[in-house]
Image (cartoon, rainbow, N blue to C red; front, side, top):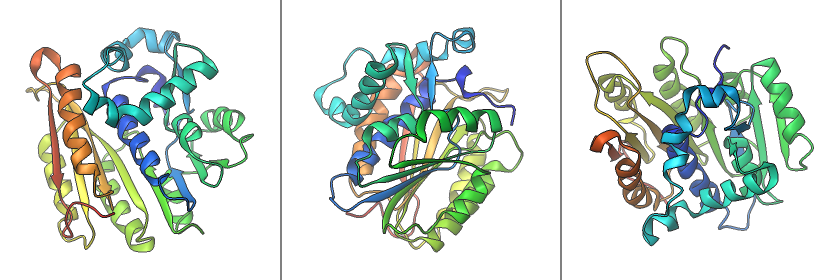
Length: 285
């Protein structure tokens, strides 16, 4: 409840998470049939990089600030949905605005799609509601994200994407992420599930990822690191567990994440990981 993403908005973790989220939304939009997007820990959805909190950490300078210069055409193809959402948000709110996942969803969802943004913190939920409840196909709920993950699925749509991005302020949050993703996939087998996690203790990530080994569905472990672990725990990277990834996601991430690691890594110490962790292979069409 004390976490405020404004201090970290636009950092390397946001770039990685939002680039892949935007790609996934665009991918689901290739089919005409509608889909549901559920964001279980939505925050306030939009951030001002000139705000005192963001300026105090300067994390955006080492994230979105470093990707202003274009990459190669192959990398820009993967980044295209993220670039489009970022440009639309800047046109709407100003050049120093940075979109959280709700703002990215607003720009990329089609009229027939539906988005549900969930936030527990009362003040943040109020801000989120003011910003997005007036959009016809979006709905904001003041609710615990873990409760929402269970109660909002399955939706009436057969297709959908669930983003689970908890603040990791409590002990055991990584284990809970894996457990809840697996439970949700059993309840709604056709959904795509994306779970974000920080990398401070790589061995803990290995242990948690082993929980997907018996999953009878495809799953991926995607990671971006900007530094090597040291003797003291510190944030050196982030990752996404993805259940039911589109079959081209591994190839896209295999191009994008090494390029981001090279650009965002500290003194050449960036790295990436793309690994199939589900028992059913890498993905589906």
